[in-house]
Image (cartoon, rainbow, N blue to C red):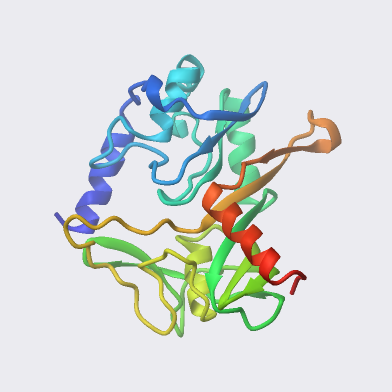
Length: 266
């Protein structure tokens, strides 16, 4: 099956009401009337698709608030406002009313939502802080859809970074994707020559690696975490909803070790 055929199949699956899965109920990071923010673990798909009909974050969310999410229907994505890549952990926002869904989608589309990630990369970016504005074009390579930084064309993309600590050939960054292109942080970091640790697809000075893993081999964890989400919301104190996801243990341990070995920033 081609990537285009799989995309069509995914769309058909996503129009079906997700089946609740109590074993996958996510941790609630924030809940106010109309808005639910939950914590997605790494390795869990955000929503059902081919090969993942009932083992996704949305299946777990339906076990929590299925009555509210189900009322929104497939036209409003069963309440799902945005997504994270399967291998990325962090906060995911769902709406529990139609009015909230429309407002949240508009906030994301207008780039009013601030998303802050933590990324451990190999090497160092060209400066301690800065931004990458290289355009990104989606392209199908073999069985995978990937993001590329073409010489011409592509969609506008902007990623800002700030160095937190460096040691032994790796750098821990605070990263803000201003736009939301496919695999944006991973694509831009690789384009800067400092790919995310654990990323076997996007590499420095090489085309995306879309080959499958050898049988019996597990992928290394992708050390990219969606840490903090700030959403404009008039009814919230200060006019913003803020959800923070606990940093995964493997990133915390590495960051502490780096800081101890080489204290200081930048």
